[in-house]
Image (tube, rainbow, N blue to C red; front, side, top):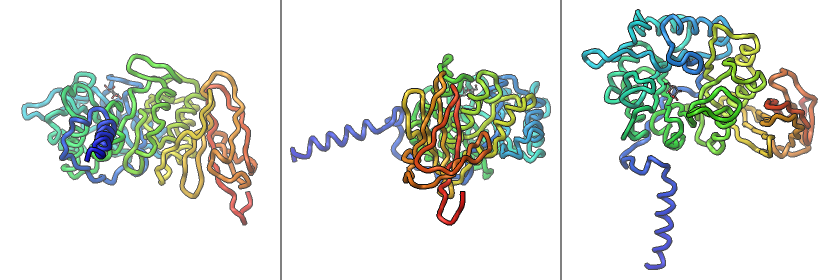
Length: 408
Ligand code: GLA
């Protein structure tokens, strides 16, 4: 008997250590919610927060929705027009939530209808706590009532934040809202936003989420941080090791795009778009779509990069090489192809060699590489290819093995 004790102790220690912070106190009767069948590829859309913050109103949302169509974003695959924090007014006498009457004089349903009339979908924001991060009414204690309201308005997507949740347990709080959404009978994509603090990749899908934020807010910068918000590379670094938690219907969310907001260079914005596609991340633009320059539009509507993001296998990419400022990321795609990103994190130009072993291929295999930003096939190669990668930028490629009988 004594022989077994140390083993038992070890097993118990392993169990305790494997429980992510915050879950130790979760009730044991939690059961996994069945998938809702939505978001089989990462959601694509636009969200008001990164550019407009709290300054949202009906006219603005409708303008952005129209610009999503006229700019070609809709044709490129963007669908969800998502209004973030600050749309809420007070609750009515029965506890029903209303839109702020000054900012939304016709109510929220009129805005939703206008967005739907453009062939787009509508997303809204709330919070699991008593108040949202900006001090508007939160969903706590009103989950079923709010879900019904959203469904009546025609909402297609809910982002659910985590401010002012003192004492709440994330897995159960999010599962309650997922149950409430499901009870409405309306298909509503459910986006969890606990900033990654309680390891939502471990329980987000079981709690009924379609996507979950993995980090604090993005800061429109290549690296570094700014209060709570962190730069693009800092977000990227925190995705390493999370790939196997993602798949069709349940995605890691490294936060929204900053492309077009002015804090980074065009090369750095191309890097964000490329890397987010490698991560099978939701592509949620965060700029003012009504004032986009041609370069911003070209980045956001690069269909070759979008096709990588939206690849139906839904396998997230991972780094296969990291040394100094150089990184190589690889993502498996349908049809036996792979997407590749060569990332130069530093401020000096880099010469980087992509070898077939990094791609998991035999070195003799002829491979067709295609540059997804230059929209050009490269000469068919074997073994390895050398690339010059400019400072703080990426090269993004797909590789397709050239099979016998096919010419490159
Ligand atoms: C949190 C979220 C952001 C945004 C704001 C709104 O910080 O992480 O994405 O929704 O709240 O207040």
